[in-house]
Amino acid sequence: MNNNNMQEVINIIDSDHVGVLSTMQGNKPHARYMMFFHDESQLYTATNKKTHKVEEIQNNPNVHVLLGFDQKGDKYIELQGKANVVNDQQLKEKYWNDQLAPWLDGPNDPDYCLLQINPEHIELINGNNETTIM
Image (tube, rainbow, N blue to C red; front, side):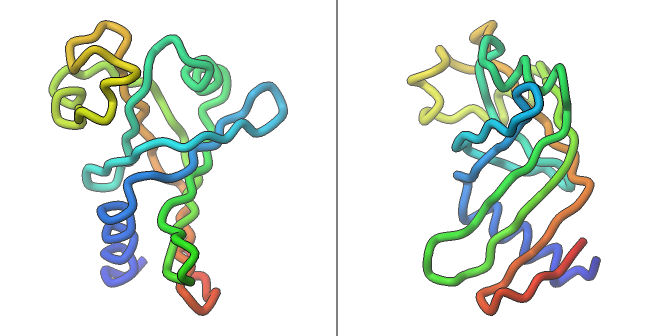
């Protein structure tokens, strides 16, 4: 993976925080919109510990993420990886934002956790439908 492609992936994550997270519910995919953040090579999304996605990830950590498509033919990424539930208070404070308030009572909410996604395969698709695999 060259630095230009990785920087483009980071730019997409930085500019398009909302994407689709797919987990496995039994043997069927289960997709939902989530807000994503990154730290180095890992992706994070906030959730409530009592959600189906947490249970699904505990049963099968394989996930798929789509980020960046805005119907203008711009670049987007598809990411496959393994997710795990993280309860690190420093990370929860770092990634807390007020848009999470409808679901959680703040960074100290005992039900607040993060899903940490470790990418195993990233595809960067540009506006010409050309794919770069990383």
